[in-house]
Image (cartoon, rainbow, N blue to C red; front, top):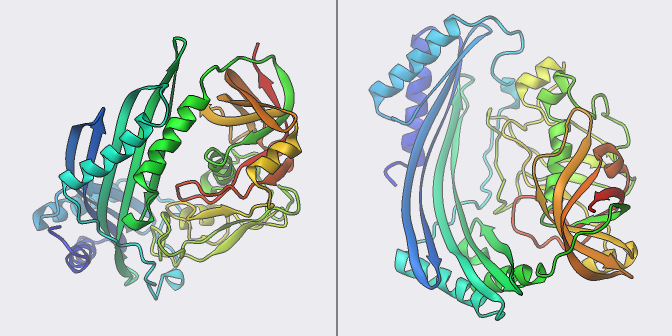
Length: 441
């Protein structure tokens, strides 16, 4: 990599000095460089090899409470000067905004903990192809009904990020992210079904074994064969663990600053109110070692902190950056850039125990479309999954829609499973919701 943290810090420091010389009263900038390898094997042959290298810089300047921003992918000194000049020109012609400005200097991160996020994987294309081939071979050999493959893809990447502002804050850190995925097609009696699986981690040794990923992808594809449509009904619904994060994101979207100050949220003024049953705890831990969403400070330099978003079912806090906090006459929660390493505590049941508790209903394993309305809470999405009878999976189902209202779905959360071994930055098991409408025939 042509840059290191020190050289990027030097670029940001020069940029902030340039902004000051051009008359800005405040300024902030972030610069990021990354490089990686993406390799796909399909039907045993290496299909694509892609080496990636990206860089970018963004600067925001303030003239009083007038704001201007500009971006560039050119990190040469003359390009940086022109980018600052462009941001200053914009700021001089914008209207004043009372909420504009940097975050409070007292909230800046004074210590940057080592979160163990940097684990470069020195792997060449031949080694990457061998690993991806093991993954695909395991999938194709798992069941004779696996008739085709979309391939197995290995990704490895490393990035450097530095942020600084005119409060005197300047900090950065390196990160890595590696993943391996596989997608295959099962066929039986003329019917074809596709499914996939993947693993993602900061360190290569934390990835699932290639064979396990391939076998999981194959098992999921085969399980979908023979899918039926069902009659429209109301019943309990389990959102499988891999889909449950979408329900948490629906919550987060409703308590984000922009939705609140625009009065466009079904959870407007819900702070301090019960939103879930009293056993539910939802938290974030930005300092989780090797966490896929870990960060020592947010996108404004504000120190991140572990916290409860929901405790004993009660909404404890919103998700705010400094701008939305000022609009709401509150303080930033250190969430410029989003929620980091969200988690909902399990109620202790295994997936099989959730099925037994549900007895009869629907397990959702795939969602389609964007059917979540943050303003009203109305929820309606195309789905596929499995029908459950007598606490056991009976048969796969497809071409259905699940519908309800998010507020009622949250209040009707009966259990969260301990099957939280899914890849990703959100830690959750499967959700059992008391009742939803399932539209079919």
